[in-house]
Image (cartoon, rainbow, N blue to C red; front, top):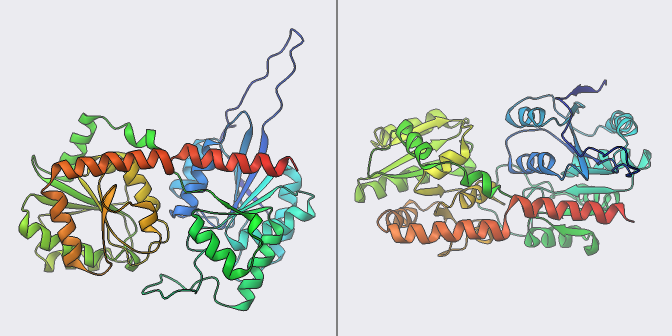
Length: 413
C-alpha cells in the first residue's frame, strides 16, 4: 500500500555559520516515531510532546502512524512542522507492514527508530533490521505493561499478555529493541519478570507534563474561564478532564458530588470530555437533581486554562494504570481527589499532593471532597506540593532528557 505523507513546513533547527573557516554544524539526527494511531491517550500525547520538544540542534522528529485518522494530535504535529506519514495497517497479523515500512526507512535513513507498543515494535523493529538500523527503542504504555499476576476488579479491555503467544511476542519485541521503556519501575519490573525478559534492556522514563505551559494562564483569563463555565463568586469548582467511558466511573463521581454538595452548597462541577456515556451521565445528573450544579463542556482545547480554573481536580477511575491527566493536574497546582487504583499512589502522594479514596465508594470520595472544600489552607498546601512534585518527578523536560540520553547511548554503540 502506498505511503501517504502529510507534512507541514520544515522544522526549525540550527543554522550553520558560513565563512571565516568555521566548521558547519552537524545536521540534526532523525528520530522516526512509529505508533498505532494518534488518539487522545496518554501514550500518544506523551509521544507528541516528545516529538515536538526534542532539542532541534540534535534531533529531528518524523512520525509514522498506522492509522489515517486526523485529530488534535495530528494537527499539533503539523503546526510544529513535523512530517506525518500514514501507513495504514489492518487488524490482525500483517507482516506485509514490514515491506511498507522498510522503504520509508530507506528514504528517511533515521538515526533512531522509536516504536510505541508491541505491534509497532514488531513491525518497526523488523523493518529497521532489514534497513540496517540498529538504534531502536520501544516504549510501552502503562496498559501494555499490565500482566495477569494480580486480580483486577475492572479492565477496559483484555490484557495483551494473557497467552503464551503474546509472551513470545513480547520476547521477540525485546530482541528487536535495544531498550524497552516503561513509565514506572513497578510496571516495568512486573512486565519484565512475567515475560522473562533480560533486565538490562529495561529503562524507565515517566510521562511528562509541561509545568511552564500550565503556569501561563493569567488571573484575568482564569476569571473569564470560570465565568464562561458558570461558576459564581465564592463557588468551589470541582472538575474532571477525560473520556466519558465506564473506566472513569463518572457515576460514582457524580453520586459523591451529590453527597458532598448537600453538605457544602457552594460546590459546582464541570466535566470536560466526550464519549459514549454522555447521554446516560446527563440522565444521572437529572436523577440526582444536579442540573444547576454540573456543566458538561465537551472536548476542551484549553486544558491548561481549565485546570488552573479548578479548585479541586477529581478522578474516580476503576482502573487507571498511569493517569497522564493527574500529571497535568499536578502541573497546574490543583489539589487532587482520586481513587487509589493501579499506579495512582505512585503519582499522587496521599496527604501530600492529594487525597485518595477506594474505588466505587461514593461516600468515601464525598468525604474527601467535603474535606477539601471546607479547608482552603489544605487545598493551597496540597496544590503547592503537587506542582513541586510535578517539577521534581514528572516534568516534560525530565522526560525529554531521559529519552535523549537513551538515544545518545544506543547511537554511541
